[in-house]
Each structure stands twice: as C-alpha cells, then as structure tokens.
Image 1 (cartoon, rainbow, N blue to C red):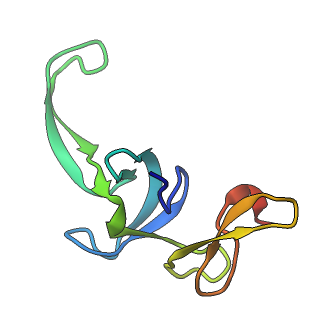
Image 2 (image 1 turned 180 degrees about the vertical axis):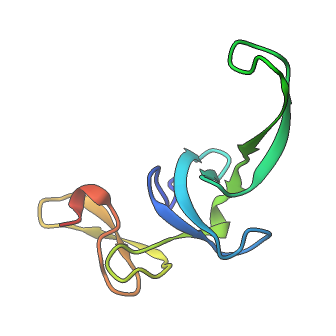
Length: 110
C-alpha cells in the first residue's frame, strides 16, 4: 500500500489528542497504514536494566499514528495539504501539493 507521506516529511497532525502539532516523520509502516512522528504520541514504556539503559525504569517513546491523521506540509505554500501525483516530462512520478501545485518530494524541490 502506498502512503501519502514518506520518511523525512514534515507533517501536521490533523485529528486526535495531538491535533495541531507538527513533526518530522521518523518511520513509515505501510502494511499497518501507520507513521511514527517525532515528538508526537509519546507513550511510557517499561524497560529492564540493559547496556543501553543501565538504570531500567520507564522511558518515553513515540508510538505509531494512523496515516490518515497526518497531512504533509507543503514546502512552497507552508500549508497542510492533500497529495496528488504528477508525471514529469522525464517519466518520473512526484508528489505535488493539491493547493498550490508545489512539489513535495525533496529530491525534486529546487
């Protein structure tokens, strides 16, 4: 399943407890239709003492959000947008902003 967001995109959370917060997508889980956004949907997790966590105890980690709850921020207009796909002259497909037509894929932004 292809999602409208990719790793590294800046997104706005559109609904739920974290509505209005922005963050960068750290991980995309396409089979589960979920994304992990930096600093959003923090949950406490109990960990045992280990070399990474010598004390053990509780740590805060980001839990996945459903992909439908996030909207990418357009680099051209700066607004949250829906995504359209466009075929370029050289045959490449890119994601574009539905509002202004700006390209969302970082390798194509000039």
